[in-house]
Length: 203
Image 1 (cartoon, rainbow, N blue to C red):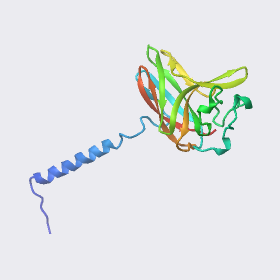
Image 2: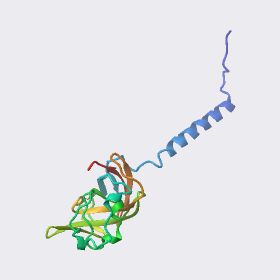
Image 3: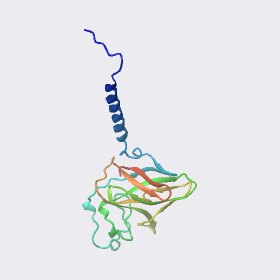
Image 4: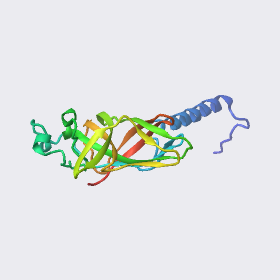
C-alpha cells in the first residue's frame, strides 16, 4: 500500500505547530529566571565591584550546648573566647546577639573603578538579621563591633576574613551544612546590589 503526501503544506497544521514551538521556547527561557546570579563559588559583579568566592563554616540553627550564661560575659572572661565559627565574642553588647544561631561570611571585594565605593548593608534569607562587623585584637583580647559601612578604595580590594571584616548572620533559620550554598546580597553606595552564592566549607 502506498501513501502520498499533499504537495502543499496544510496551513492549518503549521500554525499550531509554530505556536507549540514558541511556547516551549518561552518556558525554556523563563526557567532560568530564578537561578543563582552566578555559578556557585564564582565571582559576582555589579558596576565596578566584583565579589569573589564567598564562604562560611557549618553551623546549626540550634546549638543548645553553646548557650551563653545569663551573667555578664565580661565578668566571666568571655570577651577573648572564640566560637566554633572562628569569630570573636562581641565585647560591647553580646546580649544583643543570639550566639547560638550566629555565623560569619567571608569574601573579597574588588573595585575595578576609578572612584571609591562603600558597602552599605547585606541581607540573606537564611538569617533573621544580617550585619557588617569587624573583628579586632587589642592587648591580646579579641573583640568585634558592628560597622555602618565598609570603604572599598578605587582600584583596590577589601578582604573579609576571620579576624577582620565579616558579614554576620544573626538568627539562622536553617542549618548550614558542608556543601550547602545560599544567596547573600550586598548593597553598595555606587554599584548597587551584588548577589553572591555563599559556599559552606568544612571547619
